[in-house]
Length: 408
Image (cartoon, rainbow, N blue to C red; front, side):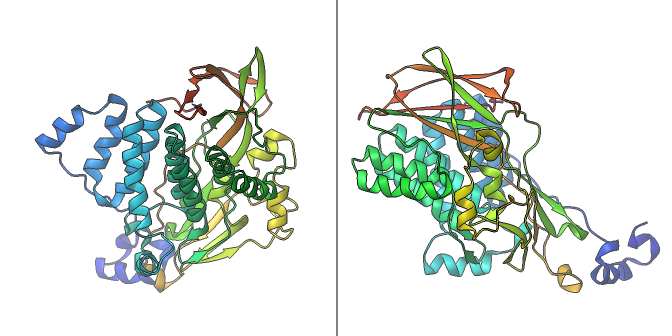
């Protein structure tokens, strides 16, 4: 029975402030704008695969602008619309950097910006980092290695930003790709530094050699989820994505199937800060788990190696038994103070993958490559394949991108 059924509306408001357990309100509903004739005409001119995301951008306004730009960017990239992807992702980057940049102006903005569900969406650290990942891939394809490397390093910077704090960056995917970009720039010393850093987190990663002129990048699985939990949904729970069985990938080389290395578990990035499992955040302050946990990372299960050994060392041995399967985040105090705080922000970039895999290869311009996806038992999933092409830039370096996520 609700508070209102027991007493007057005024008394219910007081009771809800004092006794959160009996009076949690539902999620706030935001109006969607009505499209003008000009908007509708413009929308009809966009590629059919991108129209749902563009419609959300127009109708949901500034509050979800960055989230919708993220979705447009990744959808366009996977569908082969590189110019649309570049515009959307670069605009999202500019919006992100207005709040999460390494300068005093951005720090002042962050101090006023932390309003959770009421705020304009800017994303969690892992989401912001992935904007730079896709931007970097586009720059690689264009042969713009300097901007590619800058993008991947920008992703590392976003990995270190969380609310008011900064943490060490451990996004191995960004480190690997920064090293690859440095190689293509003709900067072997910079590349060696990146790959040396990579060994701390991924000691068995396949380092590119002189014979490798192309890179294969593959996505598997579905995005981590953010769910409201606890009394009044003032707690945020990170959970691995659901509804997928693909955890590994193989590519066909000379008639044989070879594994593509799983370099990054996106759920791990969502549920940690600087390699340490989050227990909760209260008033913007992170509290880390002190007990030994088990994250269940796809990387350790799929590669059957010491792939996370470096993360264990960087965490001071706290990861000897793995990480937390769920990170619990609190964004409001209990009692009366909770009534003055907004609900946790459960919006998230739901078109991200669960894991990203990479492999340096030797390929020819225009060469097609078949990719198949495996389940947890290492068996190919029937009907789940992707065929992609190695696109070479004007400098003679190639990139092929494959994904298990089917376009809408």
